[in-house]
Length: 312
Image (cartoon, rainbow, N blue to C red; front, side):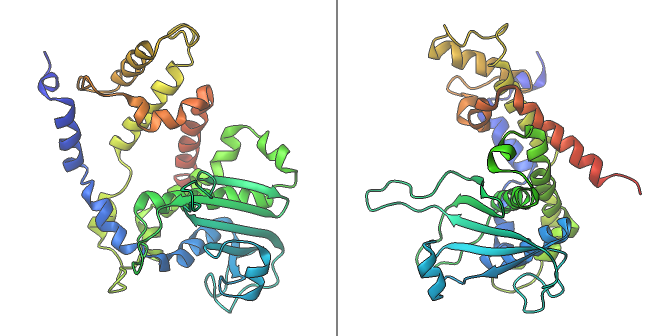
């Protein structure tokens, strides 16, 4: 057999984490305190030629009267780049107002323990008003929030949706009817831009020293071949289970569902899956409802790569 056939699934995950330096993603979180959010907004704004200006600060009386929770950040979005950075007093007031973004960062629960915040995603409330639910873990009492890289990517992704929604001239229903690759391209572009090493240096600052992250640390956290292999595995599972020639969704038992999902995942894995493993507990479980539309996400990554590497 091949050399990889002697490597256990759990060992492969451990070795992959060492090779890809997964621990660096948590070290990088030290450079993403909550204070980096205005700079992140500025990066996304400059990418799309818009400006985010925070309005109705949480402690103001208008906020209490508006009904929005104090953790929701409300931004006015105007056409045109900022002259002094997001949140600065020197703004481009002459740009056309595109609308408002309601950024709800943290998950909240009721007294009964039930979620009060929608699942993560962007929602076009009406023309000119977009709600972004991030559903992120809230920092502990007396602690500062440190975003991990995936949370930074998620915020940038949803901001890309927000700009797209504010520029959309139709109704929310018409926006929802757009092809998935059309809706996901602006968000995929935004998340890819903010993870570029040159871009990250513009908004990442250490929570204690205020210094930028080392270049070696930034580069170790870039998306590499392992990210896309994992993505390909998820796509294989989500698409394969919607293939009637491969899987009978109507008559299959739970055990047959798991076996089919593992077989689809195994196509792009050099090691044999652990007997207790199921890919439905990973990202494929989140994306399985997309079915064939999952191809749209792959198309978006390809288009973003073409945009960023296009020659002038």
